[in-house]
Structures are given as structure tokens and as C-alpha cells.
Amino acid sequence: QKEVEQNSGPLSVPEGAIASLNCTYSDRVSQSFFWYRQYSGKSPELIMSIYSNGDKEDGRFTAQLNKASQYVSLLIRDSQPSDSATYLCAVVRNAGGTSYGKLTFGQGTILTVHP
Amino acid sequence: SQTIHQWPATLVQPVGSPLSLECTVEGTSNPNLYWYRQAAGRGLQLLFYSVGIGQISSEVPQNLSASRPQDRQFILSSKKLLLSDSGFYLCAWSRGANVLTFGAGSRLTVL
Image (cartoon, rainbow over all chains, first blue to last red; front, top):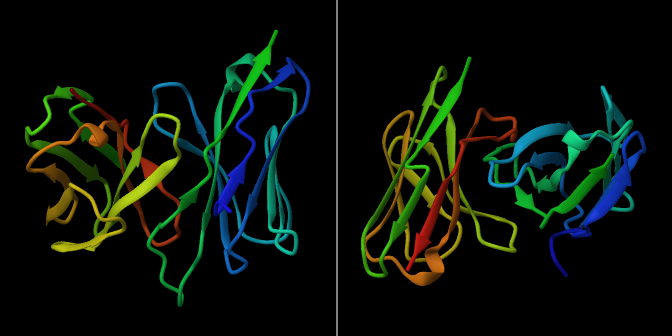
């Protein structure tokens, strides 16, 4: 079992729709969760971070975390063609309070938003 | 504000040749620094991280090495490249909160 699993897609949604991206992780003690967006040929950029169960909203983006189910998701409302990219889920296990940014990434979900 | 620079952006190297990728961070002190690799069709893999000058931790055994000669400088090296070293190399920094900021990346093709 992979440590962080994502459906590779591609996920295709029409412009204006809600895109739903999902991620599951295997390490129960994971404490920090991130969504990165990566355009083709570019480096990843952080979209959202979430640390507590529940929802966290930032503009058109909502991250949802359920630690009991080991599940984190990203919703993109009013999807735009410019949202077309690969979305990477990342998880980190904070060991003893030290944080070394040792993120474990999923393989990413390719999202295509068509006009 | 903090910025991260990484170079070269692209390079094509023959098998057996040496490698040096460099990364510098501006606008912060004592950052945590990381080298990740993204191979074609695969996810991002952490190669090295550093919490201070001269302190390097390796995550996976490989043909590469890293050094941190200055507080905000991180270098990835190899003495002899292998075909399997091809990939997209990303330098990143953080300040304790696990939030990584990536550089623009260096795309390496080994022929």
C-alpha cells in the first residue's frame, strides 16, 4: 500500500463546476496535510494546508480532513480552465515536535477544466 | 519577502559525467533546506534535507550527495551520473511549519 494515494485521473470537469480531488494516507499518526498545484513543467505551489479535522476554506478552495478515515480532499468551486493542472496531496508525520518538512507526496491527480 | 533561486534550469549530461545543482534562499535565516526529485510518472521523492550548515540527512541511498556550505546555500552533486538520475530536481525551504516553498526546478536529462 502506498503511503499517500491519489487517483491519477485525468479528472475532467466543465467550467463552473465543482472539482473534487481525493487523497488517502496510510500512516495514522500523520498530522499535517497539504495540497499543491503543479502546472506542466513547473514546480509545485502550495494551495492549502490543513491540520485539524473538518473543513478549511480559502476562496474557491476547500480542504476537508477526516483523520479517522485517513482521508483528505480538495474541492474547487467554480472551476476555471486556469485550474487545469496536477494536484499533489502531501502528508507529514511530525515526530517529537520536530518538523523537517519531510513531506510524503501522492502521485498527483491531473485535473482538466474544459470551457 | 523570501525568494528561492535554483540553477541551472535545464541540463543535458552524458552518463558518467559530474553534476552540480545549486540553490540559494534570500530573505530568511537558518531555513530548513530540501532536495526533492520528481521522476517521469512518479511522485516527488525527498532526497536530502538540512537543518543547518554542514548538517545533511539522506533519505534514500543513491548516486547523489548534498552539501550546505553556507546558511542559505544548498548544493546537489554527483561524481558520475547514471541514466536513472534523470528527472526534475526541486530545491525547497521551510521554517519549521512544514510548509515547503519550492524553487523553479532543474530538469536533468542523462544520455
